[in-house]
Image (cartoon, rainbow, N blue to C red):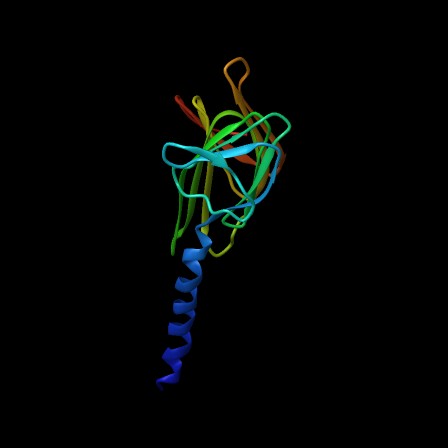
Length: 165
């Protein structure tokens, strides 16, 4: 009779052991001049480095950084600045928000069937929600926000409400 409760309890224990490693942002690769700012000082970004919430990443000309965000891939393109606004995971799901100040990012976000995935890219004028899709988001003062959906579908949210593409 006791063995019936051992298996479910052990599965729950394994799930919670895996969960903290799930909510992570790591640098997969860096090309050219890429820096990060955590605190007051800019430093060179390096492969295999962990990125914390609140960190800014800036890329130079002909430079890029590829990030692993909870199993999804985000490429920060040249002449871009992003900030990790949020990255949390719990038993209900994961929630990530990247703030794109200027430049462009490519986000290839996988949908995890067992968990609710909430992945957003915010610019000063709107927010794009990504789930199980690939998109390119660009922002600049002249062009505004441009979203290219490369695969799947996205939702957008502006100051006047929610829209779907």
